[in-house]
Image (cartoon, rainbow, N blue to C red; front, side):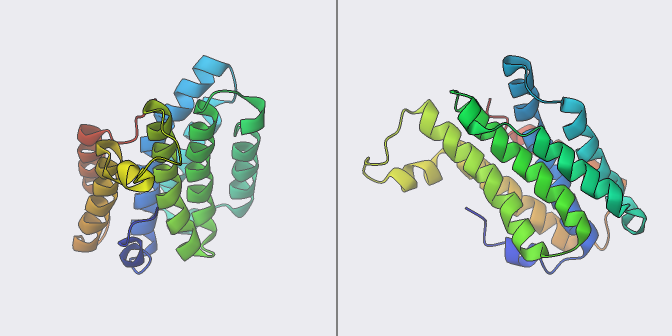
Length: 196
């Protein structure tokens, strides 16, 4: 479920798109750490380094090493859990979280940015959707199934964070470190997708 404001984001400059991606990665990172600790799978350093690459690219978009991007994308793929290998729904949430990081790094290639931005927005909401279903022991046959998920406070918080970030990015001329700090503080207060 990508938000409508993604259409606004795709028209903003590349550093603002990277900022949105970076902030989304920061929200899903705790999910990966939790999964790694609980199920002894994956390498948190790979995911952390991937997020760092996105962060540094916000301020140095011309110094992006294409081979490094390919290597990191490969490493993320290898460190993404296969949901068939785990019985826990946490594997699905972690898979979506890895997908956010993967697509955020993929954004650095500057190809198909519309699809990538939509995927980043959607995968974090898919992870939350999965969590809500499990937490509430929901069944697809329930009346108003999708509406209940959409109305859940966790989902509404995430959608609000995404809209708020895009609204903020629309208003600033260019991204400064102080903007990143402000946005990190705002999403820390909300903590929408620290769902595990």
